[in-house]
Image (cartoon, rainbow, N blue to C red; front, side, top):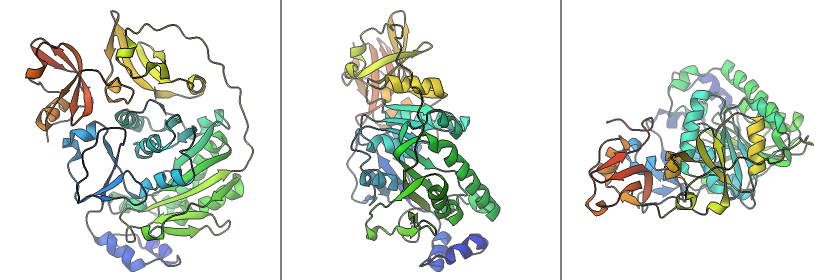
Length: 454
């Protein structure tokens, strides 16, 4: 077993009270793991099969009896669900227990790619909240933006900044989620390469980096605001010791979160400040290794001069009411030739973020105007803000996969005589745009999103 799980890690874990070394090693000898998804309740859903079990700490989480080929499921591309590790869905329970869903707030997901926790936040936070989903690594921020487009909520901003950049907006966010880069020991069952990369030196390096990330970003959290800190590591140096450091040096106070003891989650306390912490072990529950702790900021926060909204140039968008449901709930702004919508009442927030940070995306990209007409963007096709009365073409699974490959589709008999923009749908869920012409269909699925034949 020593050539699978690093002996140094097993030895340290074995010193923890109540830790079952034999069960921990045995579960890591087993191949496979657990497959789980989290549904998007804002998009069409199919009935849940009897063989599908719920994730106990997340009411939108489901365990699947086997792992399908998600690429060949059109509902996956439509944003009807997100493939997410079950343990990390504990965020949903934390949000509801801390009543963070009861009123609008500004939330920052600091290390957000690929987007699992960001999409969860948009589902569980108050619908009038604002989510800033940030990713430092440029190659990963595109994946984050795409996954949020699929999820469909227009109240999100995707940023590409170093954590230190958020010190420019002190006391601005109500909720800070830091799912910190870590040594990855909690993912050993799913990612065998992580075993070879793990070392005690890496644990120490990650612990130092986690402190730097937190110290750089915590100024953005307002006094009384909530920090949710998580890792996919088993190491105390990256978990409970960070919790103590937060209370000792960063003016944070631990918050307890009640849980159901039957879930199998290990409740621990940090050594110095007795911070309430939660550990997830794969031999105790259906999920991978995970850690989370919640804190309230007690230290005073600085403030900054918030810019006043300025009058933007008028943007002529023909018949916006035919493209966007309830257009009175949004304001429009331009990024070059591209037109975006953003929730009304958040104009100042957008101005602050545009001035202080580098933005990759904001709101819903509606499209661009050409010759007085709107050329709709793919983002609008997947957005919850899209007008429900836009014509649609229902596709079966074979047709939907051909559409997602950006292939050619025959003109449906029931669409003869109808021309113009339409939504390609599968089981009621939008996949993207098509344009109906008298004798053919033009497929407008983005070429960079197309799936290749498997």
